[in-house]
Image (tube, rainbow, N blue to C red; front, side):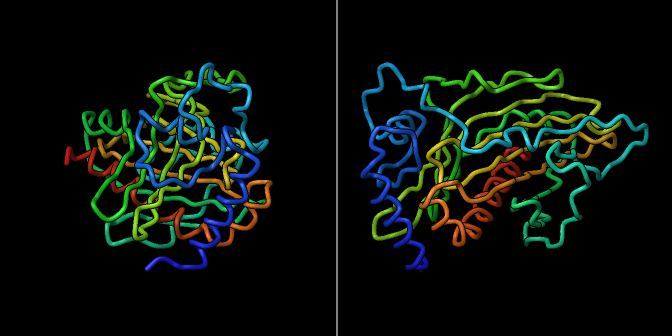
Length: 284
């Protein structure tokens, strides 16, 4: 059974936000099944978006790019090193726990950020690497739906800066969604935006090939932060996947209310994402 305190908090946040933020980009609570076709209308709570209010699409924190991989100029080959984060110049601590699916997990707090890290070896070979590199994430397993959706009409922020090590993201505005099982499924839908995409980089980790993509939270999201998904083709042909998340409360009343109760849902989301990427890697 879901925690009733959590449900009541979500419902209170939804009711409060609905008063002042109709037709503005924000976290939504809906009984509609989110899809690529309706994600924009859910996020803006408006079925007629002509033109799309792109001026209202802004990040909700000033640390965009905090997960950007740092290039490594070392010469030693490594089969277990993962990309560093520009916002965290030191090595992240080794994962402390493993799930039954052999996902290594760790969680630390650093300068106000909750940093979650998930790692798994998902297969081997270039074909496996390419399958994960071009991932999309939607999981509907009959118990709980969860995923990241991309609108049919791309929306890009003009202020997303690129560097020589990255390319313009193929996607722009996105929506994450997670189902809360009630008498009727309730979906929490959150606005995020692609920050960067790095493909087939050979300098991030010496003698390894790395691809990474990152997504950050937008105004109206109940959390503030950024997620990075990386896939690494090792020099020994192994393929590893890593998910890193930096998060904290959004600078809003609703964000501060929800923050103490969101940790479990975050972990479930990322574990589902890793499970999905593992299936893609093995063509299951």
